[in-house]
Every structure is written in structure tokens, then in C-alpha cells.
Image (cartoon, rainbow, N blue to C red):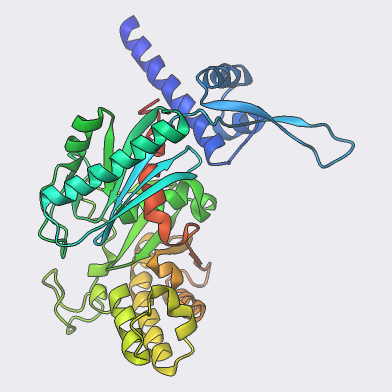
Length: 392
């Protein structure tokens, strides 16, 4: 009886520590009074927790100078510069990006390795090289801080429980790569993995525009198109990472064949490579990239194409919104650079088509992190574990 009680108390203590760190790191609250009100802990319990976190150098007290001459300066809580760090790894179809992140998702260092004609072995080698570079810089430049864990944001499908990248389409034939076990064996710290779109949604939920919403959808437009779903404040997912595969929602049953074997999938009409190819064909400029989408919207042939893209995206968003009733859609990955008029058209068509249009509308915004949401999201996978009291 007493042993079981002790275990439960220790678990709750970790959860409470994580809640406090969440409030401070994500800037939801910066004082003991505000934190106490947000998470429902007594002042004494909160004082004990903050004292422990200060002693461990996770947080520190600072002075916030009052701009009111009559008022007095007040103490605030912030994440300590000596607090543990996280290593984040983003695996896309064309590059590996690794970062050293603090608890406020400031990127302290970044390394990048391009991918081309990879195998399981060469991809693993590049991931390890990227991580080795991060650990070396952390030791030399930042005094060998404690690294909580490694978080991986990867294209799917993957198994987030066993840590295996399964068989992503158009990814050099790489399959069944147990990347989490490999990195755990090498570095001796926890290694976590999830789909890059899911983790982009998590980044928005913890640190970005999504903080103000309990229910929203992150729409990632890149080589394909997918969605990460935040439901009642939490990431909605399954171990296979197949949830939110909006790219394989059929918008025309007589449409072209998709790589998934079905016809008329959204992904056959909407992708960054398809958009860029069209812009290059119209302008006859090979130097065009997705970052040129706004300026090229004024070209008549590009504008017509973008309007078609907007309508296709809106059709899929109407379908998914009628299922989930989100408060907001956040557009990110390379889709962050879609022309403003294109986003306005998507929003108008979406709110005209949803069933709830007579009671409320759905916001549509660009990602807080531009195209870097999956990179930030890789570190957020670690910090979410800390905030949930699973690592401390």
C-alpha cells in the first residue's frame, strides 16, 4: 500500500514539475501567481516546485522592470541558460537537418546534410554525422549541457512506438529503418520519433499561433500535403502516423492515378514540385523556387493555376472541417509561401462550404515558424515529454 502510494506521489510530482516548466517555457505564465492560477496548484506547492527547479538550474528568477513609475519591479520566472537542451532531427526527402534547442525552442546551432540516392546505411550515417556535429558543438560552445533526448521529425509512414521508419514513398527505397534504437545505442539517451506534419502541429500548439486554440489543423504543403490535428489541446495521432493524410483524400474519383493506388487524390493536384514546375514552365526561369510564389501570382497563367490549387485545397479542407470543426487552419512547410490572394481564396471557399457557416467561421493563418515548423517540431517532441512528466 505505502509503496504504491509513493510511486503515485513521485509520478504526480514529475507531472507538476512538467506543468510548471510548460507555463514558463511556452510563455503562458511568468510568475508564481499566474502559474498557480493556470494549473491549479496551491501557493505552497508551487513554491516548493519552483525552489526545486531553481536548485536544478532548470529555471531562474529575474527582474521585470515596471514601465509604470508608481509600480514596483516584480520578480518573474524564466528558463535558465543552464537548463537541459534537446537535439532535434528533421528527415525530409531531400535533406537531414539537426538542431540544438533550448527549452524555449531557440535554435542554438543547426547542421544540414543533403540527401541523394541513399540506402538505409548511408541515411543512418548522415543522421549520425549530423547528430555528432550537434553534440560536438554543444560540448565546445555551450559547456556540455545535459541533453534530455533526441527528437526526430520524419516523413512517414513510420511506427512512433518502435521507432522505425517504415516505407516512405519516393524515398530511395529506404524501409524498416530502426533509427531510434540505433541512435539510442550510440548516444545512450531517449530517442523519440513522429511524423513531421504531426510535430509541426505540436510546435504550433506549444509555442506558436495555435497556443490560443484548443482545436486546430496544421496543413503542411511540401512534396505532398498532410495535416496534423490538435484536438482539445492535444495532438491526435496513432502509432502508424497515418492520421491526417489529407493528401490521399479523393477530390475527383475519375482523376489521375496516385502513387497510393487510388485515383484523384489531392496530392496528385497539389504539391510544391508541381507548383514550382508550372512556374518554371510559364516564366522559363530555372531559378524559380517556392519562395517566388507571391511575386509570380501577378502572372496571368500562374494566377489561374494558383486559383485552381486554392480551390482543390479548399475542397479537402471543407471535408475535414465538417468532420473535426477546427477553430483554425495553420498553413506551413513550404506552403507558408503561398500567395496572399491564394490564402484569401482558400479561406473564403472554406467558410462558404462548411456546415457551421451560420454560427462561426474558421481562421486561416500562416505558420508561426515559416517553413521551419518540422525542424522546431523535432525538439518539441522532447519538450512535450518533459512537460508531461515522462522525462525530468
